[in-house]
Length: 155
View (cartoon, rainbow, N blue to C red):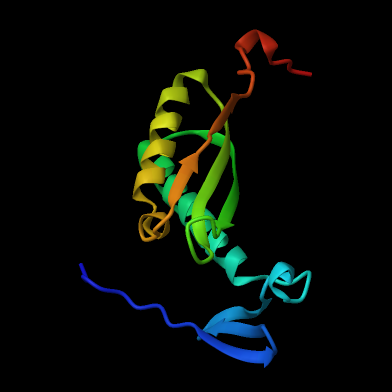
């Protein structure tokens, strides 16, 4: 197994505080701007959104892989991620990324496994581990009513 991987992204400026990022053989390119609160264009992706999206997508990839390997049967898995920036302790920086995964399980017996995998994904997500801010995990689990044989109707 290789000990190092590289990921090349190119960015170019298209207007003050705005630009486009791209990566070879990956479509589409993504337009971005500084956030409106920093004199950027409203309605555009921002570097701050990219940062939170990187953590969110890494968490989803990590959890779904662990679930597959552990044979966790879930019906849905969704994640809401919120990044907080603050300058309370000096220059602006991310101080927290709050992850709120919502998992719908098929069976109550898998609740403990799901919780363990969510906690493990939180600790092993590569992007989150690479940051200098804390991540906070706030999971929500729901079990769909299991269909019992008497609930099945054949028509």
